[in-house]
Image (cartoon, rainbow, N blue to C red):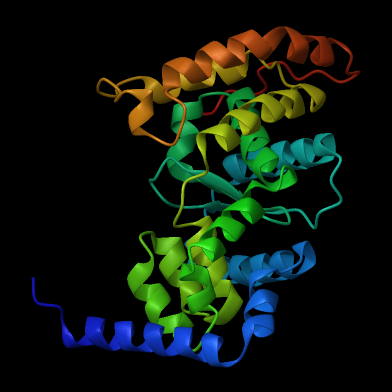
Amino acid sequence: MVRSTFTKYVCFLMVSAALVFTSSGCSTLREAQTPSEADINVESAKAYQEVKSKAQLSTRKDWNEMVQRVAKRIAAASGENFEWEIILIDNPEPNAWCMPGGKMAVYTGIMPILKTEGALAAVMGHEVAHATRRHGQKAYARAIEEQQTAVLLGVAAGVAGQVLCKTENCRLIAGLGGPAAALALSFFNRKFSREDESDADQVGQIYMAKAGYDPAESIVLWERMNAGKNAEPPEWMSTHPSDTNRRAKLSQWLPQAQQVYQGVSQKYGRGSTIQ
């Protein structure tokens, strides 16, 4: 397949960036490869503002109110002193995420699937757990080890990011260039490992229980998410746990979460129904 002139130009820029790093000495490269948590959170905040400014935010009042109160309760349950923030994006994709530092989003496409406020709490608990357990930072480190992010920190950041990104959010943030482009590739362009996903499931189940939501909804959630889907591929073909294995593990962890739930003073159960 013949590459376009634009693609060749991007490749040239990426090689040039790599040479810049090489010629500037090993210490400079090491510094670029080891951003602190505070640095990553600053870039997350910048990237989040870019998403907020470009995304179509939902104006649906009842859903916005639900998303805000659930996020507030889950954030408090996590015990992390992040600068928490959440938006509801008008997008048919069934998705939600939480960036390093506590910047969150829920897409309207997932709301009808969830059916209950408790299921939303399960999703938000899972996504918040990714942030509190620093899974995004580990993904950033893995990207750096593969050199792709290190290259993007150079002069090719904006242009190369646009080509390498696979998702809309990644391409949007990559346009900022520099560390924000690197963050876009490591967060929006990659899946968390199977171990990280399972960890977020377990910790998120505890968070939702601490927040006053019945943790049994975390199991029902995956039954709803799987409804109508074709037969799922074998788990070894994916970095994520299979839905079947996910439900089995959540059921295994449920007694501990239920014990936490019974100890909270304010219980919301399944919460409101999502209309």
